[in-house]
Length: 160
Image (cartoon, rainbow, N blue to C red; front, side):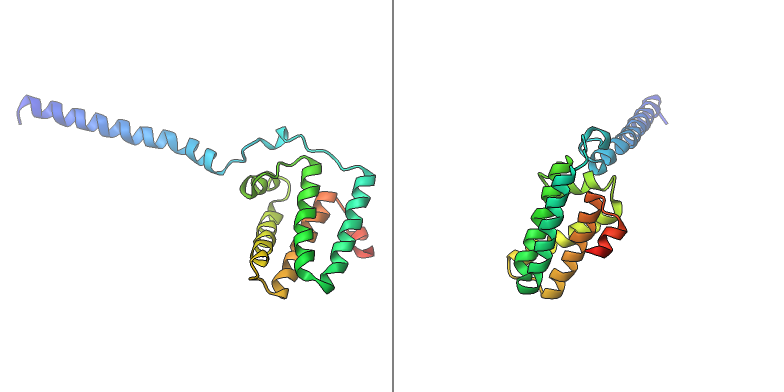
């Protein structure tokens, strides 16, 4: 093989190695950007809810839950708004569902799927495409997240 052939093969191998290493080096950064919350959890500035506000939210939930028997569609939409109101007061950014889910997943990973399911039912319901059983499941999901956000203990849940 001529001398220049070895040079071409060497250059091709060097270029291929640089491409492979460049792709591998960028992969963790791309994954981190794709899956990490937009704001680190410790920077969210989460806060406790005052006792007065907490009692107000509990009263709103009771009213929403009672409304479910007569108008499950309205009650489900109210539950969605109520959970978002509690999130907002606690300091969670609620400007988009994906960011919202990423932010709450740090504290409540098991409830993120529940919130997404419940919110999806609320959206389907607004288009007239959800059954009463769907709405009932959504209400259970909203209640679980609501209790976690208000840090309601199990004894209080039994009383209500």
